[in-house]
Image (tube, rainbow, N blue to C red):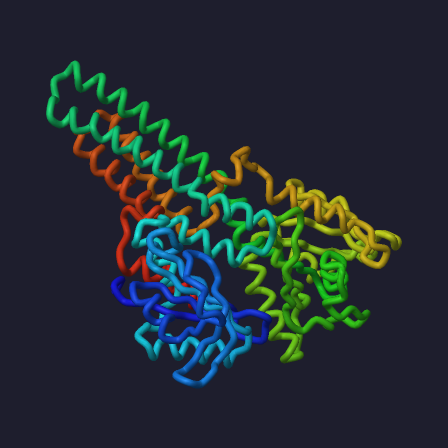
Length: 456
C-alpha cells in the first residue's frame, strides 16, 4: 500500500560511526515528532536541514541523533521522508527502528523505497535497476555506466526507439484503412525504410552488450592446465598478492580459488582451478570436477602449458577442450630449455594469441593483461558509456524486440497484409516498454525490487 508509512535501516548492520534509519510516507513527520526531542527548544524544523537532539522511548533515552525532514514531493520517493542519523552500532539502530514501527510505521520490503520512487514517477524501471548496479559496481568504469543510466540516458534511447515505432504504426494503420494500390506501395516502402533504421539502432545497442555485461558482472576467467604448470603463480602475479599456495608438488591446489581484480576498469573474476587430471585422491578428484564445471561456464580461458616439457596425454585432452573457446594460450617456463612441440601448438591455436611467460622470472604478465583487455574490446563499439547496455534483462528484451522488427521487415518485403506487420511492431513496442517500465507487471516489479537490500 502506497498510503502507509514504511521504515528500515539504510546502512549496513555492524559497528560504524553513523547509522541511518529511514522513513517514507505521510505519517513520517508525525512519528518522528513523537520520538525526537531537540537539544534546543528554540530550533525550528526546516526542509532538508539537520536538527540535533535525542530519541526517547517515553522517558528512556535511546540515542543522540541528527534528524532531517524532507517534504514531499521533492524527495527520493516523492513522499515525506525522515532520516535519523544515529550512532552506527546494531543496538541503537535496532531500537530506533523498533520505535518507528511501534508508533505506526511498517517495516519496508526489499527495495521498497526505490519501488515507490518508480511508482510515483520519479524514475523509470531502467533507472531503478541502475541504482543496484551503482551499489554493486566493482570498478570505476562500471560505476560510470551505472551513473549515466541513472541519469536516464539509456531510457531516453529506448523511448526514442519506441516513439519511432509508434509513429510507424500510424503508417501501418493508414495502409489498413486505405488499401488503395498507389498509397499501399508508397506506405510499404516507407514502413520498410523505417523498420530497417530501427533494426540498425537496436543492433548497435546490442553490439555494446557484450562489453556492457562484462563491465557490470565481470569477466569470468578460468586458468586451466595440468598440475604444477604454474597456474597458482599466474594468479598471484595477476593479483600482485600471494593468494594461492605455490609448491613444486603437483596437485597442491585441491579446490578452485576465486578472486576479483580490475584490468583497465574491467572487473575480472579470476578462477584458479585444480589441475584437470585423472586422480584417485578423493579430495583432489572433487576439485577436478569443480574445475571442469567452471571451465564449461567460463567467458575466457587462460590455458597454460609447460614449455620445458613435451606435451603429455593430459595436455592433448585439454587442447581438444580449449579449441574453439575464447582463450589465451600461455607457454610457461620460457626461461628454461624449450622442449614443447611449439609448431603443433601454433597449428592447433591458429586464431588464438600465444604468449611466452615465466612466472618465476615475472615475464609476460603485462602481455597477459593486454591480451585480456584486447579480448574484451574485440569487435568493440564506438558507443559512449551512456548508450551501453549492461543489464541481462535489458539485453534479452532488446534481442526479442529486434526479432519482431526483423519479422515485420520480412512482411513488408513480401507485401503481406498490414495486419502481419502491425502484430510484430506492437510486440516490439511492448517489449521495449518492459525496459523502462511503461509495460510492467506486478510480478516483474516484485522480482526486480526483491533483489535490492532493505532500506533502499
